[in-house]
Image (cartoon, rainbow over all chains, first blue to last red; front, top):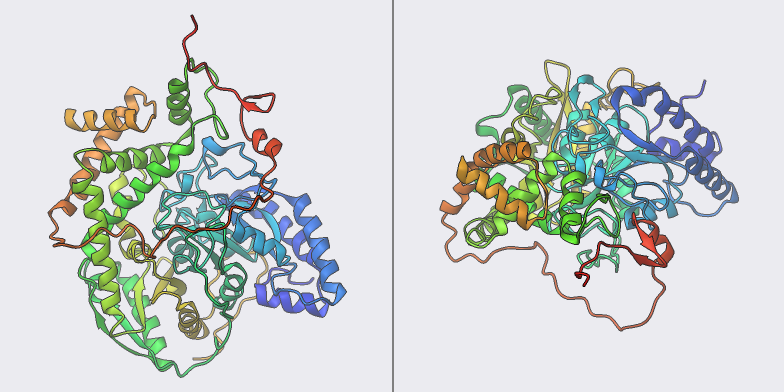
Length: 496
Length: 97
């Protein structure tokens, strides 16, 4: 029997040689979803008919001999906050439970034009607000490595689906770590691109100055392949940056990297699990083997990143979510007697608990008497945080850091204590406040057998360098895979 | 505690979110703890730093005003719960005589 559970690059090679068809890959993926999704709850919508139609079209393009993208014919999953034309896009919220967008998000549109096949939509924290994918009307995503644990969040479905082999790659979104942390908890690769590199058009807005769309994949090369398709200027997103296109896969397998790696001393001082620290430091030594030199750097504002992030992101969310009025789309209370009641009831019933909590926090931070003390103050601290990173990058090229203080925690462990849940985001939110790119790559297992990820943070638009560094670790580490992740071939480290 | 409950009531009124009494009590408890932590930021010395709303120099994007095809009106209206003759339906906003 053919092994059809493949990385993007392996599947692409077989498709071009005609050794496998996109229909075969797609049917096999749909079968795996049917068998295994119940266990991890990653997909919330599966669009088999659309997927098979797209697969047949991809096969036609592959056979025609035309120049096609490496993603042509590859099955993918999309986080359920990215609009997909004709396929419901719920944000895991009652508010959008029946919302069927009449258009595609630009990132989705680009992948579909490249010939990628849409298997369905992936579970998440409601409106991307959360760090565990437990705040969802569809129930919690479970970690394929240990189903009593969370998959991370908010892109938990996107990470779990890739880790469990239900799709070759997925898209997530990252406002404060929502791609990197679940990728790390599930032992896969995730990229939060530089702010402005990928269009946000069609991404349901949470905090517009922080949100970025990015790939979650099984390995670094796949991550670069997906970024090649989704990066680039989009006139429909005024914050998307006009830059020349770049091939992010170039030079990935080159060693002899003469780069300087900075270790933020504040990140390693306190409150980090010993196994996580050791795995991250071991990965840094792998970078040294590949030619890098490492040294300490300092990010002195670290203690204030959580308040700055939660005040800014919640303030932006309170403004962005004002659009849900129950009238033009989304949940509508059927019994309201006047317009104001219609707004209040529809929003009260349509939003879940965590979303309400953040909107209230954000509204308070923007209200008269508090705006200067909270919101404006947070924006000033944001400038300090961005300056910390800029200063650190004077003495290094890449910052190596943990993604999260621990590995995946247990389901329900933090839902009763929102502040504790927020505090865990300490190592990821600074990157969003400063608009930087950051890649997470698996770098080991803790003593419970759960994956640990390292976070590689770069200067704006240095994604290619991050991929090179990530690949140097991956080549020495090998890929991590949970048991029961289908019939994926096991692969030993290629060297080292 | 009563101050936290007051904060929640005011914010919910401004954000136009109907809360049950139970939710009000729960959010008052949560936000009390969360704000105690977040307010540490107001003591930071930020000198004369300007607020940073955005990482990019965001500017207004001008373009010529040329008509283009946009989304199909019928499809957009289909997203709404209640429509009539191509319009959204809302409860009456003016008092009847």
